[in-house]
Image 1: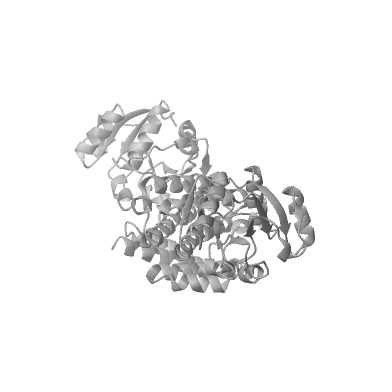
Image 2 (image 1 turned 45 degrees about the horizontal axis):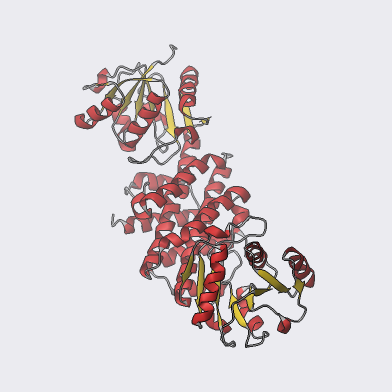
Length: 253
Length: 253
């Protein structure tokens, strides 16, 4: 396999923008951008110092990186000539969504990538997979230009990580929203809780979360648990109850 | 009321140790320590350059800070002469647990304080309450010697904060434990998730958790939700389901 020198970006969303910029900044040439929305494609192409390709079958990079929503990956891939090297960037979608092609793979940055936030790719693990050993080596070489950490994993392993990531990112964020809702309901300043949040994270990193657990459920303090439940209603109450039961069960209290 | 110059610490647990040290380092004199376990009391008294008082009724500070477990606060307080200025350090217990005394209050550092961790009190909000305005002023003066942030709150407000803190600290930690359990079950390195955890926290601080929410439940992606549920069982499955429902409800999807 030839060394990959140029990359096409398919898609114009957050991953396309941030990954494209990180690749460009690491010295890789972005050849072109394809996007259904031609205005967005033009904007991104300008940012990546490259051209817009108007028909997807004409994308011209040595490697095509598909950065579209999960449900469109397979359909978009099938529009690209099957002899092109092609990868997607999704945590949840199996590599086999690209098996219309000869050589294909996955290039998944394990991070929550948002439009207006700076993404420090060097700290982000990039999870790689390919049906072709040479392509996997090339993906690893490219990933290492933007990140200190690359890992070669199967689609099943990547799906497990994506599931765990929902707990770490989506569910943690939602619990913090609930803490804010509770504070707001009494006109209390939510920001008072942020030093506690920082220490929570630092402590669980140092000790591991099994050792770091404290609180009423951990010490089976039903007086406090019941008082807290009496202050809650709806989904917050259900969540308090279920998580307290789960903590008790973990420590077999 | 006389200015408070000396403080007695009642109790020898984590709060007693760390709060005592912070007060001492800020230039306040600890007069004595009382603890049921005389060996622990001796160790703490040595660390705080003070004496051990063997009978609790003889504690000699201008202010007595009670740092014992919640269920013992009232009982311990009643053993101390009622003309002594007295505070407890609990988030969950009403100030009125001390109403056997003339002047009393609460001095609650809003943090998870663990034995072997350095506690940076200057960043920790200290929540204050008293039945006496002069004592409240004195508590504020003392708290400001160790922390940049003091807040005067009622017992009900403090209880609300304590409840919200359970979400921020205990429940967030438990969700991270579940992410680790999921990763461990497939021999995957849990530490891969830590950059995502950091970004989760940074993002919700910047945007607020309502705006920061992403993920399958946020976009009502039932295909991914159902695939994830099929990989889970037991309490983890129940938690995934309930939190996903709660996220959908939050955004009325």
